[in-house]
Image 1 (cartoon, one colour):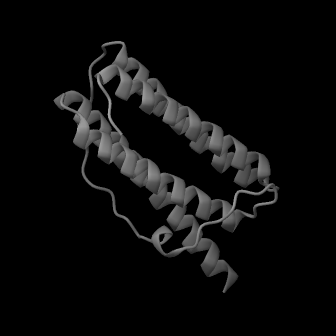
Image 2 (image 1 turned 30 degrees about the vertical axis):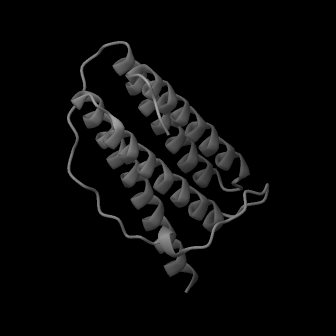
Length: 150
């Protein structure tokens, strides 16, 4: 992917965060349990928070430096892809979410590598780490769910 300006990179990232929020709201709508609905609604809110941060950067506000690396359990790396269907169960929704967060992590890591501006690079690295935290939370929930089944 090629971008000819920082604004286009930010526009792309802003749209990506909106897509992620829409995705999690969609998953929330598929959950029968109110607790699980709330989990996915919470993730949608976090993605909208990322979107707001990107909009603020685009509007010229200061950036926060990136933080350290987040542990990756790599559980999602070994699971098969799950088809998005109306009747996803919780375990399947967690797998879909893990895969989505891994893709978001890679996107922000790649955007950071492509950014020529150090502040943008720092922002994208921070967002990559936040997506890694999301993936870790889904992996932990998946691991807990699997332990409860056994």
